[in-house]
Image: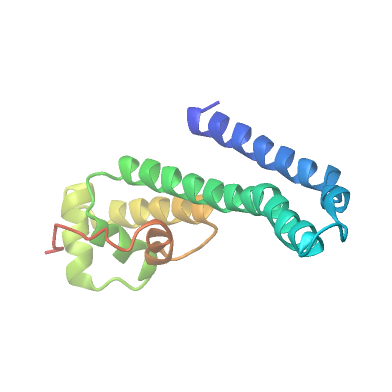
Length: 158
């Protein structure tokens, strides 16, 4: 099992524990509810209840969202490592633009297949299939933006 998968598994267990803790002690604020002093009821039923909710349910939800982001980011890094000979813009073109113009096809063929156009189509199909499998048919740009809007290609496609 990959390290990140172990990490996420443990992280999700922690989120489940927080949810269970929240359910088990959701009524604890009632022990402090009453009218022994001014604002006691407000402090117990509003402040205490919301604090318990925040530290259990809200934290568990945050863990879930961040866990998904970590998985997407590590999958993205692994995908880019596989196709490290291509620029970010090249990958975006292959994934997001199924109708690649002839000039770009020639440039990609030079990079990927030493100019072999027939082999290029196989490579493009492989890249697209792996991407769609890993990222549920989402656009490249959409996935990339989920974790950073600052990644910019330093290379320009010829």
